[in-house]
Length: 303
Image (cartoon, rainbow, N blue to C red; front, side):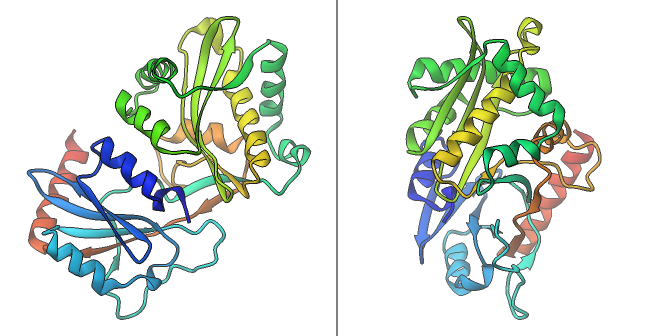
């Protein structure tokens, strides 16, 4: 079970207008999402092994909902399943859109804290100690509107600085208030919040989800993000999680990835990288899907 296959996650997406509806069959949640011009597709994030799902049921729902296609993302952090399709499967290895990259970096929380530190790059261990020496304090914050607004303001600074997409204030609010094990952490120097990050905690996998920090150069050298990561890694061990998942890293062979600098930051905490997911798709309306996929390629090339 992952956080993405829970009812709380589906309700959060519904409240945030990320999905139009969701279904549950055989303990699997299916999301109905819009593409463009009132067209829809179905999405499952994640299942352990695609061969264990009922393809006919999924295809029947796809047709009933008049969806262009249905996409399934597998998830296998412990490599218990090879994720190989059956020869006669109606699904094919492909995807229309990836919401989470198939590659991630993890820390095995069965290791001791000393062993985890030892596997970090020396500069990162130094930065953690430096933040402490600079009197940066890290603490869990209440998930109220004021604190979520503080996070959101820092997120706007971060996305403007690093040129990537951010969600709405209501999305982050729904995320924190809908997911019981979501946590909001702040790093503060004197009276100023200089970094604010969102995490989820679970007995299997604790996840670093969203991170934001100030663009003020007077505070950038305090190394607050390093102190935040180290604090939450320790909290994840206390929660008895098996793994700490950094989520979202660039594909190993991808050049000029928008995730390059994020990946570099994460891989200095751990060199343990995994391909944890594969994508499979069943196309219900082949001509319309071809057109939408063509438009997607044109847009990515020229815009």
